[in-house]
Length: 387
Image (tube, rainbow, N blue to C red; front, side, top):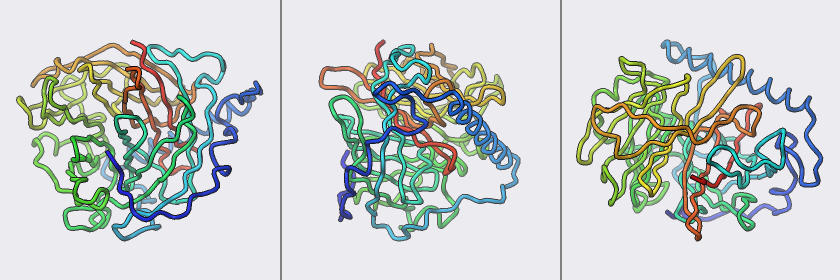
C-alpha cells in the first residue's frame, strides 16, 4: 500500500517534533514522574469530555441533532492532497503508575506517541491501516478525510510521522462526500488496491480503487444486506476486514456494528460476498461496544472494544475470535487478551491494525479518535502480541 505521492510542502524542522515528552504522557526517561494532581485532572477532564460526547451521541440516536454540527475541514476543498505537519511526543510508559511495567495481558508495550498538528482538519481518526512493514499508513477521519504518510522508527520505537498528506474523501460524483452530508467514516478494510470505507451515520460502504488515483479515486457505494440499513443512526457500522485468499471465508467483507443489537442483546455483524453471505452476532459482555477489528495471518480475528462508565470513565478491551467460527447465523465469542482503563495511557481508541516484524512477531498498532476536542488526545500506540 503506497499513499499518493503528490507535490509536498517543505518538511518542518525535525527538532520541532518527536522530542519533548508530552506533559500528560507518562514519565520522562530520566525518571521524573508525572504528579498525581495532573493524573487526576486528566481523568476528570477526559470523563467530562466523554460525557459531552455521550450526550451528543444520544441526541443523534434520538433523532435530534446537537447545535454544533460536524463539518468538513476548511483547509481544502479540491481533490488534490495537501502536505501537513504532524508533531509527535513520546509516551514513555503505558502504565501511569509503574514506568517499568511493559506486559499487559497478552500484549507487551513497545512505544507510543501523542500526535498534534497545526492543520485544523487533523483529528477524529477512526480507522488506520498499515503496509506489511508497519510503515506506510492510510487513516480516515470522522470528517470524511484521508490521511496518508509513514511512521518513522528508531529501532523498534516510533518517533514520529513523515510525509503526511490530507485529502477529502470523494464520492462517485467526484465531489467530497461531505457535500451530500456524508461523513463519520468509521471503518476501513483493504483488499489489494481496493479500499472499503464504512460510513456509520448513513450506513453505507464505499469502495475506492487506489490504483486509479489513490486518495483522488472516487468512492462507489456497494450493495448491502437490507438489515444493515436498519442499524441505529449513531451505533451503526464501525469495523470491517477483508478476508484474503487462503483463509476461511476468503473473498468476504466482514462488517460489524458498534452496538446494533439483535433480539438477544448481542452485536450484529454481516458477511458480505464470499462463500456464505449472511448475518452473525458477536456476544456482548460487560457493556463493551465494538470499535474496530483486524484479521491476523493465523486466522484469528481481534476485536477492539470500548466502554464508557460515569464512574470509571473509558475502558478498552481486545478479544480474540477464531475466524472459522464466523458462519451465517452464529453468535461468536472469544477470550479477552488485553484490557485497559484510565489508569493507563489510553484515550478514545477506535482503530487497530497488525503487521509482522522481520523476525515474525506480530505488532498491534492502535489509534485514538480525539473527537476534535481540545481536551482529548490523538494517541498512536504499539504493542507486541505475545500469545
